[in-house]
Length: 131
Image: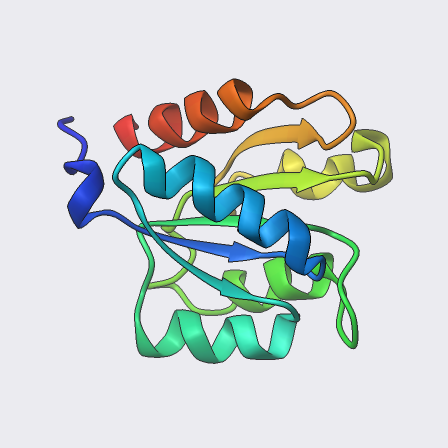
């Protein structure tokens, strides 16, 4: 399957830390991706519903509703459950491994923030969009 050109690819970053949002935006914008962001799950659902992104990067630790609740909400909409998702978080993978293994959700990559480099993030995005 051919992936979209970066300039026509819409990535939604769901991250409560504005500094990290700026960092992710710079990494992805510099590679030609269009980036939108939400700092909480409620805003993310509104954003996803109004402008279906090509890819979602999500932190599990969010204000109000957590990222797991967001993932379950995405799963409840068949047309949204096809969006590839990258989980980029400090939360250990074992804490939500059942969700990562849920074949209904299209979680294509888990990255731990303390170990993920800018190149790791960019490669994960490219890999997710190529599927």
